[in-house]
Image 1 (tube, rainbow, N blue to C red):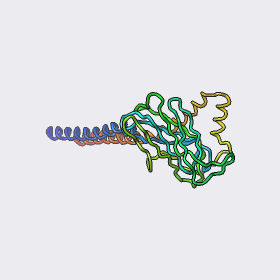
Image 2 (cartoon, rainbow, N blue to C red; image 1 turned 180 degrees about the vertical axis):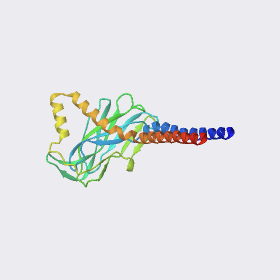
Image 3 (cartoon, rainbow, N blue to C red; image 1 turned 45 degrees about the vertical axis):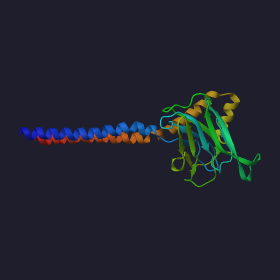
Image 4 (cartoon, rainbow, N blue to C red; image 1 turned 90 degrees about the vertical axis):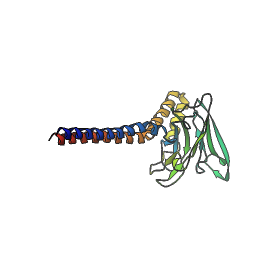
Length: 247
């Protein structure tokens, strides 16, 4: 009987160790998976044809190499873009000719913004640190559920990372109603400019960045939950086997 109990206890320990190892592995994988999160985009409006401020989040470098340049491709359906100044980066609008002129309320456009390029002024963005870039624009007309993609390229000290196709930062149009002709984003920007309210601008940028952050660690949370489930299963199995052995 003693030999049977000893054998059972050893089996219990083996199962417990195996399940605990599985849970620990899941938790250990959570951090590096979160670190490899894609460059993403969030928007303060998703209404077709509405004014919006789209925020692009760069959460990591190129396999550990710091980011020197961030190039955002602008869809043809968005001819005009107003980039937000980032004090750590220079910004350039790369213009491309239009196949046909576009009449707007204020002017006739013969070229559009093809890319917005942010370049680090002094030190590049180190891997493991995050920065954001804001573009004010008018979203194209379209159906709810349509995905507006902004292919983005990180040029790093060593190598590049291109986010395109399914991995491209994007905004999905919804049935939201567009603001008035000036737009809520314009009203905020104009008010900050009139009053020199730099603090308000920084607060808006910070709020948008916080809104974008949860997507970066979604996989980490899932893996963490799996680790918790594995640990709970291991404890339950050990208790059941121990009860069976004593009975």
